[in-house]
Structure formats: structure tokens, C-alpha cells
Length: 288
Image 1: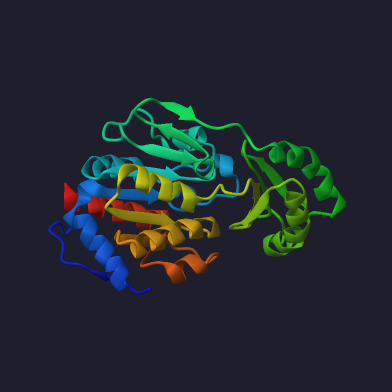
Image 2 (image 1 turned 30 degrees about the vertical axis):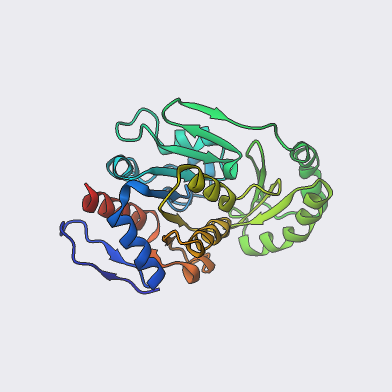
């Protein structure tokens, strides 16, 4: 969706205008009542650029300064990710940062929670199906002839199969959809497709549930969510649900040519993590 620049009190941080009426209402509510606003953010592809090896992912260099400037002005900033929360905290550089004392990281799609105030992670017991899939997955990939370069990422409460390193990543991805779906179903799990990755995880773990639960727990009067991938669609749906109940919201897509569904649903599309950080900085400048 197209955007335009609003008149800004800080010309160094112009604030883009959402292309939808609902998005403009959400932005207006945020600017008018920031102390009731929840800012929800995906990590990979939104705060951190996508890289071939997820272990090398790091937040954009301006992410922490932007969040530290914005967080004290709003009710809550929550990073919602499929990663274990302690990994997102480490790769994000979120520990011990002035201004981020009340940052929350909802990892494993909300199954685990890290709070900056305590520095601790709280979590329920893991789903038994994950251990069963972990044991069977390598043999299954061999049996179906997974493309060279396909690899498994261990995520604790989930497992992800990546094809980005294969010679033909999309073909390798498509070839694995059905066998991984069968494996997941046998053990009570689900498969979530993403950007050249198929993640096997327990049902009921998604960013929409995490975002809704957190928004309702803090009594958010406005909800902003930024994401880049198919796994962020449930969070977009959660914002739509909140809007239907009268809570203004703003949907932001961290743009990519690999995933178009979010851009079609978003109120505002920005240019990847760089654009997300620019937007966070602009919001902080407006509110500070």
C-alpha cells in the first residue's frame, strides 16, 4: 500500500502515513494516547535482517536506541518471536539497556516470557510431540531425499527445517511440505510455513494468541504490530479482532519480495528492518 509523509514536528524523523482509514485511526490513537499503547514487534525480518544462518541474526544496529527512546513513552513494548526468548534477548542486545526496563519478550509464540524487569523466563512444560518429532526428523529427511543444504534448527519447543541454503530453495521447500505435515500430525503438532522454512510446533502457539493475551492483560487502548512473514498473520488477525471490539490498531509490514500476504493486509509497508527502525525512531521523536 502507498504511503505519504505527515507534517512532522521533527523534520529529521518524518512519520509515514498509513494507507488505510483503520491504520490512520490507529496511528492517531497512538499519538493521542501513547501511555495506553502496546507496540508489538516480530524479531527476524522485522528488527533483525534475514540471514542464511539464523544463529548469525542480530538486531539492526539502531534497534536498541530506537526502542529505548520509544518504550518509556508507551504502555508496553513486546517482542513476539518464535525463537526462545533468551535467544532473542541475546541477539537483540536487550539486556540492561536504560529505557528498556519494562521490555517484554514473548518467545516460542508466547509459550515463554522474558521480562527485563526481572531478567527471568517463565514457561510451562514442553509438548511431548516435539521430542518425538526431534527423534524422527533426521531419518525422515533422508528417506524423502531432502535437497542438499536443507538443515534443522533446534528451537527448544519447536523444530524448523530450512531450505534457504539449497540450490533451489523454493523447490526444496515445496517438496517437504507434505511429509513434514504428515510427521507433525502424527505427533499432535502443526506446520507453519515461512520464508524458506517450515516450522513444526504445538497447536495454540501463535503470535495472535500471544498478542491478544498481552494486550488484554495490560488493558491496551491501542495496539501496533509489525511483522514480515506468514507467522505474523495471526497477529494481524488479532489486531483486526481488537479493532472490531473498539480498540484502534495499526498493522505494519516489514516489506520483502518473498512474502506478499502481509503487505496486502498491512496499513503501512516499510522497507524491511531499516524502515521499521526509522518508524520507531519517528514515533519516539513525535512522543518524546
